[in-house]
Amino acid sequence: MNFKLEQINGCQVLSILDERIDAHNSADLKAELLQLIEQHGGAIVVQLEQVRFIDSSGLGALLSGHKQAVAKSGKLVLVKIQQPVLAMFEITRLNRVFEIYADLDEASAAQT
Amino acid sequence: MSPAILQVDVIIPTQTRYLDLIGSIGERIAKELDSYSGDREALAYHLNLVLTEATANAIKHAQDNEAKNTVRICIHIEDRQLTIKVYDHGQGFNLEAVAKPDFDHPKENGMGLFFIRTLMDSVTYTQQADGNVLEIIKYL
Image (tube, rainbow over all chains, first blue to last red; front, side, top):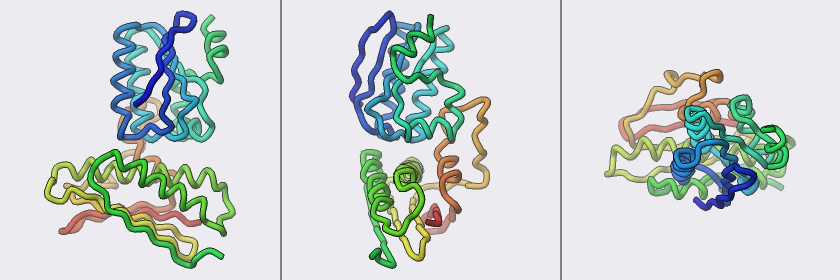
């Protein structure tokens, strides 16, 4: 899986550059998130702008990251989710579990 | 004019790299359905997702049996009924025993079959001596 990692306003921002998250690459995402949380803690922002498809294993990888972040007194925030992908969070009610924002600015504003 | 019958039959190795191919076939089929009056983009995503989940499930189950390391996926459309059959050679599982996710305490696993059940109209799983078949029906 292709990622871009940046530090913006004290947050680790992980942009997923693949269009598709499924059982083929979700283990990579899970491992990357766990490593990031282990190394940096605090707030991790996952930017999903490029992602046009996610399956249950992709949702599971993000949920794993969320649980790990909370266990470390941090948080995992999602931004720039495309509508069809957001619909999958809604069907599984995971939109109630994750903090989801339109973009980084909105996510930053919500943290202050 | 749409053909009365459309059937796609694919056999893939039990490797997750082929999930994209299988899902994409479903997405393209949704976009080719001339007579479908619902939300075509949503149907395209749903078929991509359901085929991806069902195939991933079959690949996962098939890994305990290396002798027959392929999964067969059959998509059949006739008279406004779309039928997906996914054949695996694994141990099989009890579909009825798969519980609905606990939304208040979400888990990483178990959402795949929930998606299939929620987005499609009928799901059955039949275990036979020569393999198992997950049959999914969607009325168009």
